[in-house]
Length: 267
Image (cartoon, rainbow, N blue to C red; front, side):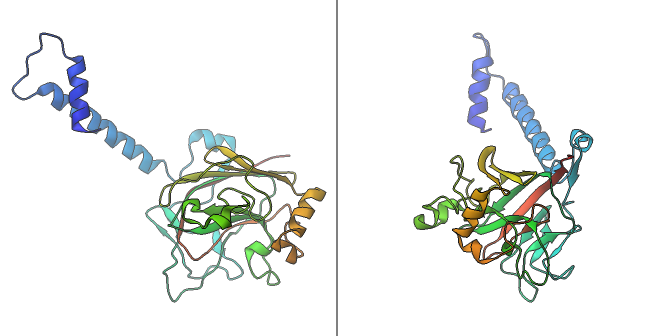
């Protein structure tokens, strides 16, 4: 809060017979009060990242990123080797400028079928990345996107208009298959977005910043037709599995993630 705002606040509260004090104690008290609030708020924000609340623990949530290591994740089809993925300041990042390391998608050690998956992400200017689900990791599948449907991560504001025209490439969509269910814009590059993916009995639902953006049933004829009508139809195993690993895409621009959590849904 700026000082001028505090002055107005103090003026509104002072009585009509108020006489300015030499050291303006009321103003100083106001500054101290709001500064303290700001410090508390900042402290809470810092400590709330990459941890589970007691309520989340009781509800069955699991933390997939501890904010310190890449434990629980490895490079797709390569295992635990040095890569462009690292941890900095409590963020899982993919640095496009990293040299002399193996590049590729980062994939979870475990597989998931019915789940509620949440995470926060920010992307560099003109950035393009994604999150894949139901990934089948095997030598015959060279990349995660040859088998797993993608939740698009994108800096919409700095993309060519023709790339976003059909709605099947915008942030939060079921990439290349269906347009946004409800229109929503991601936050500007460098700012944090919140995302959610729920899968239950082969039905997937996507959210971006609290807005539902995608909903598809992977057991239907419609799903098969969507795949056949896209470039993903060139990969026979794409979108067929309803159980698999989660993967983060290594792309030409940098991406950062945090607060990566999952709750497996019991049937």
